[in-house]
Image (cartoon, rainbow, N blue to C red; front, side, top):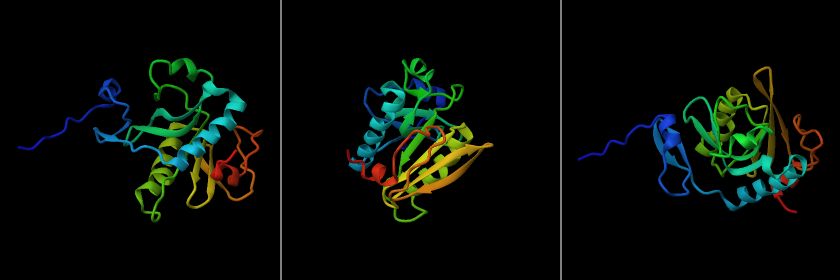
Length: 193
């Protein structure tokens, strides 16, 4: 006897509750559990949290717990780091999900998990798949933080397409959204206070 899993719509997924703290992406209607973050990725996200909360306040910075509805498959992504717009604070009181009808966040950053090569799933997810989905979602600034390559790539939405700038070592990261930010790639990648 075989078991055929039930395919969920996104609306059904939003209602789904399994009484755990598990996070899922919905891939072709099936729940795919998201693995826990690595220690390094979590440390970098917490470092960014401190840096950005000084600019916009603690209630507008979220790490690892904000879900973004996006176009494509999967229709949801769990972002590592997000800077919210002021109106998002009240919109997210019931559920930490930014739906398509809500304005996109100001900035999203993803921390690339270790990969073997550019065909590896971890590499493709952040450099290709999420890039395309975040671009279509209209997210104005997307950072790809890659500890393995020792790079912080900043993608800025210009006329509907991302323009890319890479930062390494002691280069100051230039953010169009937060020009007052004073961080270097080394500071972000080392995530030390």
